[in-house]
Amino acid sequence: MTTFGPQRKYVPDVDEVVKSTPLFMQSLDDAADNDTLSAIQSLIFDGTPEEMALNSKELGNEAFQLGKKHYKDALDHYSKGLAAKCGDANLNSVLYCNRAAVNLELGNFRKVLNDCGEAIKLNPANIKAFYRSTKALLSLDRIVEARDSCKLGLQARGVTTKPDPEDITRLTQKAFLSTHRPILDPETNTLSYPVMFLYPEHTLSDLISAFHEQDSFIDHIHEMFSPENRPPWDTAGIYIPEKIEVYF
Image 1 (tube, rainbow, N blue to C red):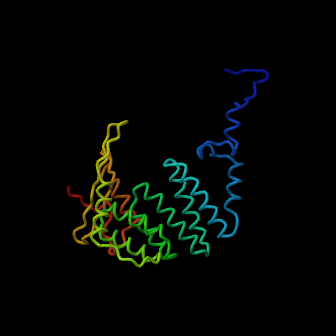
Image 2 (cartoon, rainbow, N blue to C red):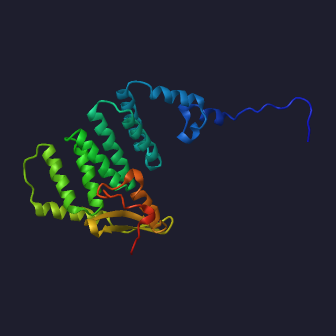
Image 3 (cartoon, helix red, strand yellow):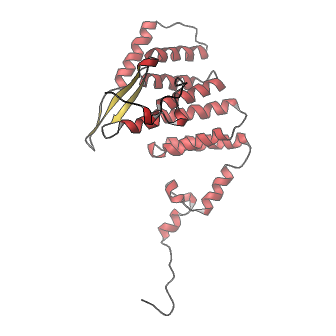
């Protein structure tokens, strides 16, 4: 229907105005198409590579502390910090190690090992990298390697005492058993349970500590064997999701 005469101008609600102001935004979802926030973000990432890497580290830490809903933001920030390619080896080591911490919480254990390896290359004394690497190895049921990681971490800190190997094995096995049990979500009444992948020809294994009952094998296989997350032992590049056969 055609109307004539003056039309009422749309006046945004006070709450809309407040939420569109960067200072009062409650989440990054409120930031879509916000020119003011885009300008602020461009300032944050403007500077020397070292400044950009440091800013990204701080933003990643803040996002990580906000909880699981913000883990993706934390990963993005740490990755941007590494992409800055600053010349500070210690800072880059911290960025790798912090990204590993997020992936450890998400259960992406192979990514944890890859990032911890890079962190240790850059700073052989990064004890947190050894610690997170050990936790990831335990989660993958690689007990012997976890024990070795503990030893290397102690050596990196100059600890010369030699713990009893049997004590180390017993403690690592106890830690593994305490973190690998079926978990029931009382809200959805669904179950998550540990699932182990065995690669007999390589005498290796992977463990998904919380495989949700509604997940499919192919979803996890695509994550485990994606081009950017290819296992270092697959030198021939034959482990491709579309060609992998699973027997269970």
